[in-house]
Length: 265
Image 1 (cartoon, rainbow, N blue to C red):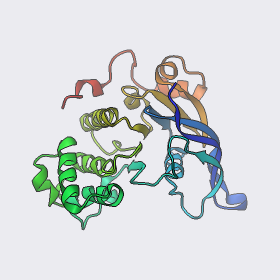
Image 2: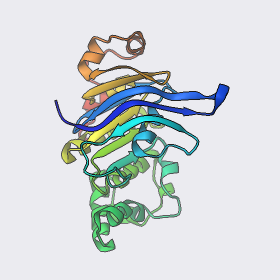
Image 3: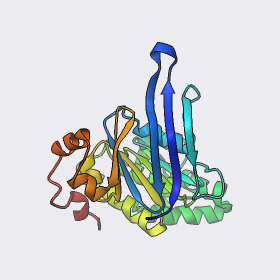
Image 4: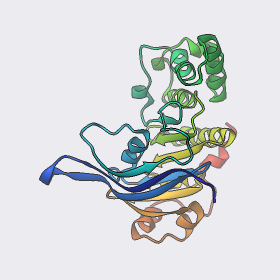
């Protein structure tokens, strides 16, 4: 088994006080293994996005945090951009509308890799080409509103990996996209993390989508981790009743998912 990049122990996150206090995560124990692709599955409000924010150190000030997150796979406390790349559900809100695409993709390499702007420019062009943005040189000087939703998500991915992070967290990155574009984005993510040896946390409510690429699956319900294991075991021999209900509402997992059909798109 691969070594741990991060170890989460008895993590609880809550909002509000007194009678209004509600737990977003409750007593979570979870190891994030280096080089593995972990799919975090669960309904809205189950704690998936709170896990991402906690790992990135981006919980809001009003959140009450108990427990511990250790990083044995890093020699220093993690920093977003340098060690952790983030891709969110809506690239329209995560990309800055007044900065060019090139500026946004190049920024991470300047800040975290120490490249000058000429080197970062070349790096950004290579990344835009790598995520299959047509005519990267033209795209470099364009703005987010000039691209489709799927293209903006590809640009957001390029920006997130610009500093070559060890961990890439993607939070519902395909939910606003049609099925074909969803599969293309997931295939691209799988390809990128394999090439770079990154660890991936893929947050989704769609267990069928995750089934095509995940090494491991963690199932969340009502702020608790209810099942965690190797993907094949979770998908074929689920233990928890909630996981069984999720699977019963999804596709037949005995056949390949659409992702495999578009991996070369």
